Length: 51
Image 1: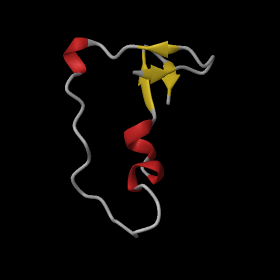
Image 2 (image 1 turned 90 degrees about the horizontal axis):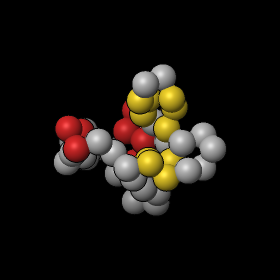
Image 3 (image 1 turned 30 degrees about the vertical axis):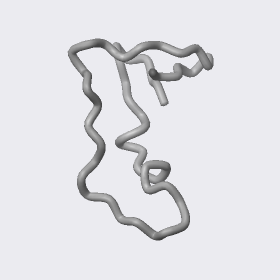
């Protein structure tokens, strides 16, 4: 599921599933590494930003 700028939930399209997790991740033992990887959690679809 994606959240658009208005806060609405939008389902991901079937052709983009399954979502693959990044392989090159640095763990610091404190925070989720995905929270610092904007290229993973910020996506654009038809010029509509999602996060």
